[in-house]
Image 1 (cartoon, helix red, strand yellow):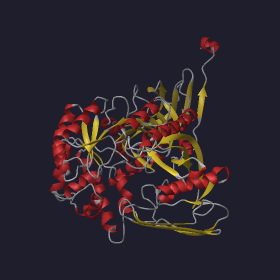
Image 2 (cartoon, helix red, strand yellow; image 1 turned 120 degrees about the vertical axis):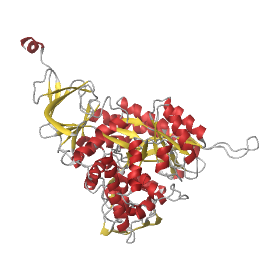
Image 3 (cartoon, helix red, strand yellow; image 1 turned 60 degrees about the vertical axis):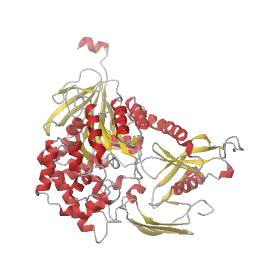
Image 4 (cartoon, rainbow, N blue to C red; image 1 turned 90 degrees about the horizontal axis):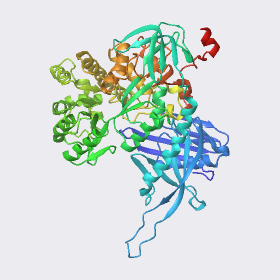
Length: 631
């Protein structure tokens, strides 16, 4: 780092989370900069200060960027390869370290200090929050980062996690409330979407054109097109457009900025498959009362077994009794589904599932390590997450530990050998049908994993990459999986088998649910396209993301279809989704429980170039008293 606080050189080597080699280098000499990574390489002249944004970096790298932008004029700095970085101080907080030494024997007094919370913008869709120490002596040294289930804090100050998180969440909430107040369309009188064709999710057909009237958060009426509007209303021109029920993303781990991006993508309901329970409850309450923009949230209870591989969120338990207590906690708060994770012991599944079913709770999840999907279904699973968890049923040996990267590479290397027409596959799918087990395959999660070489466009997001902030588009040129000359072809063929498996399940009557488990909104759009690539029709794929979502979120009585009396959870598309399900990317208007948002404005608020033009929206005023008498 140079005297100006900017990087003069950077070298990063090693391996990614999923095993791909990392080799990224940057250097600046005078006005000449050069860099090389697995995504790209360039050499150019620059004038003035600029901050290189590394694809692979350590937490301290964010603090280096933050300090550099703070020194820049107007606290803005050009980013390399492209873009702009901005920073804003949001608030500050007092922190106290735990006392050291032995109580009563000369124990040191607790240390105290103050730190400031900064929002660094330009690295992604959401701001990056970082805490820096106050005081000249500290030179804005990093205190750390805090998230609901994760903290990275300076040694000795770890106990400030919860206090700092509370301050950070409150500061973040102010931004979201301001966005809601700015972007939510008027909701004190009816909305009418005029002359629009609409998707009947029960029958997977297109109806209309019609006028769809929305009032008091619900679909109030469906009238013939261009019928007279009685009284004051907001009219939206739906001519040449297509109205669908709002999309359901059945596999998310959401946060406030993800929630906004979901709604921008037409996702009006999400099923959260594992989160910090208190954080999720707070976020859901904020969205429900109009303090933040986001979808309806259906929470799933998360239960993990304690082990060196444990994932922390929800409850981490040590035995069957602990799991039963977790289920009771969830049941008493209205949860209707739990997700079991990798370190649940196989012998726990049957008694835990029986207890959940006795409480009226469905059981879903990953297949626990040292267990196969068939065994989990027979032990009581009602739903399975991820296509790899299914096909491992045909690939694992007794001692294979699927808590490791084996659960990805074993599939990539060997799924191409599975005989989709064979007895083993047929019998397994029949078991799923007989037991009424649903499957949330998250196909997009694995598309780039098995098909993308380093430096090539991410196949899942290449259609939207030009609209994204530069740092995201560039990061999408890398793959955390090690796809190389040796395994590229087996991986590609294995992914084709995964698509074929989805089609076999759908044709047999296995309920397929559309979940993403990746970038909000955009992953759902691609998920539907992949179902079509697997052999479903666009209308069938859209039905999965609407009616099926409502059914297996257990909210079918109030949403998921366009019917009078149901919640007005709706999306207005520019193109016919029954011909091209990719039309889900081109949404002009999203309505959630009667509150409407223009999608172009939502995307602009996130730094994403909109995919549609602004709508023609008109206000029909209420008639005057004299006009009412005359009428």
